[in-house]
Length: 436
Image (cartoon, rainbow, N blue to C red; front, top):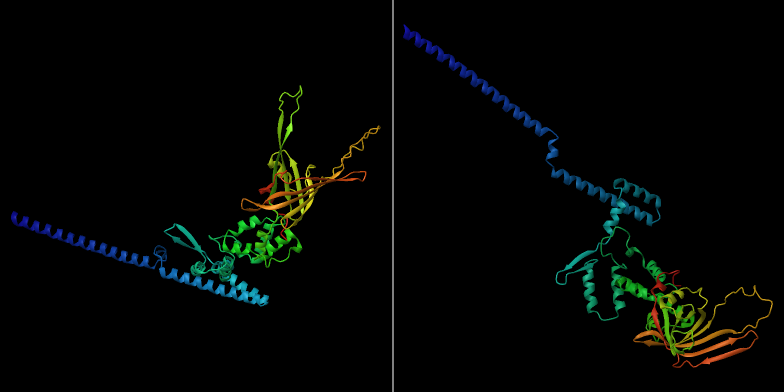
């Protein structure tokens, strides 16, 4: 009895365990199906969502946007160019209409159009010499080769190059502001007249010409050098032909004076000493040194100063045409060939001595009014043209108050040392008017 009951009990227990396993496996399958369907739905939602496009850039859309922008810019440029054509033809109303349409498409279309048409300088690196050669375009290489092989005047060759480039100069680096190359030749020549000024500062003009080939040609303008010659020798200076090749050659080769400095002469003489009980430093002889300074102005005015002071202070006293120092002689000069003749007088000073006259009469010494007539010869000194003035004649004319006149002729041959020219930088720092 016990065995069948036990076996039956075991069978019953085994049947119940199989049912539980079937139920658990079916529930697992349902969960996996639900998860799989959720994943599929989630993937579909991610693909449809617009946020996914932000993480994955679309190249085709970017290219289309760039092409669309370029087409709008091209259309705006065409409209702006049409407006320029209408403006040149005098049709201002239509020009404004096209300008407005172009600006509505691209607000800074004028600046973009200017940048696209502006010539850009490019760099060419030379590895052998470690130098950078800046060229305007490819044709400059051929022009430079032709310049090396072509024999002729330098000015002619550079003029041909300038005519081909149609530009005075080109910027070496990219410029954010207006460059001087944008100015027309007429404005540059007018600026050069300010550089030269009525003081004939042609040294600054020559330094300007060494900047580039365009400025070299501008500084060789015949009108500037013609005005300089007229300023030196007057309206009757004649023509440069046939003795000289150009006005510049005439100015450089013909004897003339220099105006950007002073002619200085050092003079010495020996004076006898005075032996007295008050002279503690008695010397039988004294060596006295003094200097003469002469400055010429292009309009014919001349200043002369005799002083023992240092050169710097004396040169500053001669800076103005109308000096305040009463010791400076003022006069005029005339230039003829290689001779220059000076006529100098002392400045008239107003004194108030007449107001405080004494009752008793005093005997006054009548020194008279003196006029100095001096003549110099212009010579070359150490291969520097027009740097030395040699004495030729020195006369003093005196006119007394009683009407009498007297003349003193001094022997200047070998008696007085020559004048040597010294440039003063302060004389050409400013310019008050252009050369006319």
